[in-house]
Every structure is written in C-alpha cells, then in structure tokens.
Image (tube, rainbow, N blue to C red; front, top):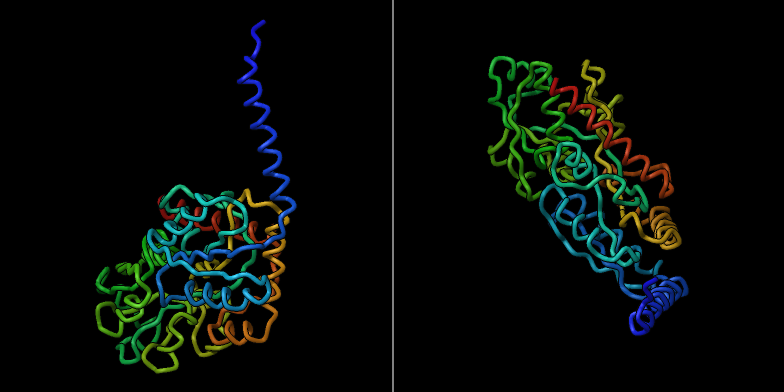
Length: 322
C-alpha cells in the first residue's frame, strides 16, 4: 500500500484545518461588517438604476454599512449578473435582477439560469404599456393596429433589447397579424427620447420609467398589457379586453445574490429590504413610479416567482417558433 509522504500529509491536514477555520470564522463573523456592493445591471437613468440607488440609500441606516452602487450595463443586464456570480457568494455583493434579464435567458442570451441566483426580495412590479407621443396620429391602440395591417413592419417600437419581454410581446403581436419593428436601445435615456425625437413611433415601457413624460404630457399610453386596466390609467384598455393573450409578462425587479450565498445572510438581507419596503419613503417612491408590491415575498417565494416567469417566457418563445 502506498503511503502519503509526511510533508504532503501535513500540507493536506493544514489545508483541511485552514478551510474549516475559514468556514468557522465566516459563520462567527458579524454580518454585515463591511460595505455591501449593489450592482445595478443597467445604465444610469433607468428604472433599475433608480430602484438600486433608492434601496442603497434606505438600506444603509438599516444594515449600518455603506452600500455603494456600481452600474454594470450590457447584454440585457447579463453583464452585471455575470459580475455578481463571479464574486464570492458571501452576501457582500448583491445585484438588481429584473424581468428583462430573465426573459433574455429564455431567448438564449447568455448562459444564466434562475437556479444560479437566490432572490432576496421582489422589490417592484408593474405591467408594461405601449406609449406614443402626445401628437401621434394614433389615438387608440386599434388605430395603431390598423396601421400595421396595411403597413406591416413600418411601425417602429423602441424597446430595451432583443429577447426581452418587449421583444416577446412584439413577436406575439406579429403572430396575430400585426407586424412591428423592434428598435432596441441599450441606454434608457435614449430609449425614452426616441419617440419624442421621431426616431421611433412608439415605446414599450412600464409607466414608472416614463412618468416624467406622462406628467409632462409628452407621452400617452394606448394599451396596458395586463388582464385588467391600470388603476392610475382607467381610460386605457387592457390587452385582455382587446382579445390578446399576452398579459402575463410583468416588469418586475428584484434584489438577488448568488445561489450559494449562506441562508442566514440571505435572510438578514431579506429582513432589511422588507424593513425598507415598509418605510414611508419607499412607499412614496414606489407610488410615484407605479411599481408598489403589496406582497412580501420570502427568498424561496421570490426565487419560485422568477422561475415561473422564466418558464412562461420559454413557453411563449416555443409557441411562436411552431
């Protein structure tokens, strides 16, 4: 029988002891004891950025550590999520993970999957709408649809990218005989400005992200992609009442960590985020952006919610490829 040389044996024993001590130290360490980085997976000026920065501001007095924000944009949010998963799963890096990124996985963009992450909390949720400039010749959604019937592909819609629920919705409408052209914009500010500058005819967006343009009477909604009308826009018809079965692609936002993050740290983050979401300042923020979440999701429930959305987007894409 071969024996392990004493030097190698001692090194192996030392490595095991060091690993055990490292685990013990992490288990005993007060959490958090140093800054927690928040990766915002889109550029400055968009809804994910606003959410991440507001959450950072309100979490600091709760967790009693700084929460610096880093914008890492690109690939429908996947560049920032890659940074998240390559950092240690120790609770000191979190990221915004939103519906646009999850739907992009179903479309084959990147290699991420829901199981790669744990959702700390679902922080925002809103149905999306189709907006046009106030002076648009399309007064109703039916006007716009009639135009696409006689001019297939001529109508240009500003979106956040290919493979997103924006793209899936346009593909669905095309499958129903209403072909529109997807014009993606990586930078939120450019996307919001495109219909106003006549670079596009409409924009697919949630109301909170273009709230300033709604209140400034520069944009107006034609349809809300939901089962029911939006309480803040009672005159705008829902997609369901117009006969379209595309009402289950909400634009949600979450705070997420790598899947291997210790449960006790996930729970500590979740408790802190829920404290923020119950605060008057957050409630004011979410009301102004039409994104309030009434249910408080546990990490397990939030992760299951993301998995269900991922499956829904996969089903849409499979159906439209037939």
